[in-house]
Image 1 (cartoon, rainbow, N blue to C red):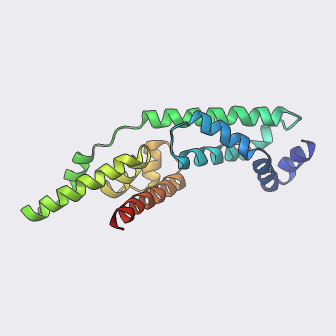
Image 2 (cartoon, one colour):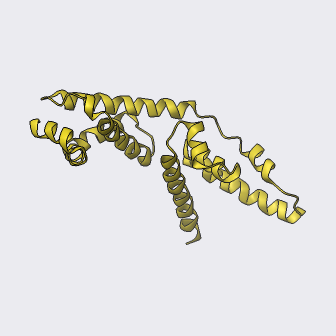
Length: 180
């Protein structure tokens, strides 16, 4: 542990990579246990938040024997619990209000086609779960930036962008799967 302690102080990037190699599986198991039933993307994001947190607070951490492992375990548990709380606080999206706010005047035929595809799309977005559903609705219906969405949901803008990309990819894959 002394090598890791020195490495975290002198070369934090290499130390963090070594820490990830050594304790990544442990952090993953802890986060997976707390976030049971959550999408795999949420678990991976939470694990990466654990190591980012350790990296960011490396100057005030005690890296003596056993202390780092105990701190990593507690950090993983707390980050996963924080993620659960954040998801529980998120508002349920109001799709119809969002849709009506952006709808323009259409013919009866266009309205009927849009209603069918709108319902199907909304069902697919809902199936993504939170916070991905909220992110997509805010991004594409309300036309908010990732920074604005992140501020509203308590996430970093780059996290919002990554989650939006992954959510769109999952929706595309389900549509492609049905077309084949």
